[in-house]
Image 1: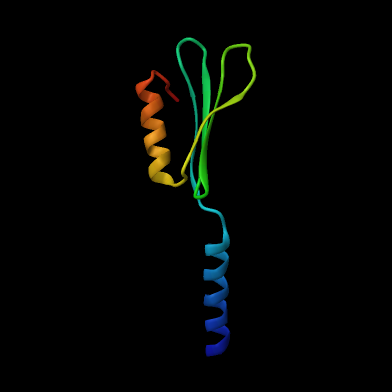
Image 2: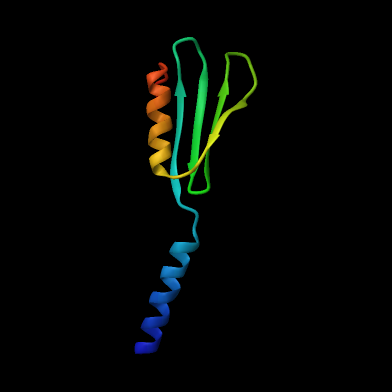
Length: 83
């Protein structure tokens, strides 16, 4: 029984560490109709933007993690985006 419990704990911890960690996602708009999406994972952050009637394009890519997600969100809020 002890071996089974130990195996179950090891298997559970391995499955949790192998899943990609979501650092954060946000969709934001500005009063002029500009839209952005911020998608951050532990591997990197990607910011895409779209002008009204336009196509989506990459605005910037940065290092990943929740700390960088928070920095990007604050940066774009400072530029007038909300969401």
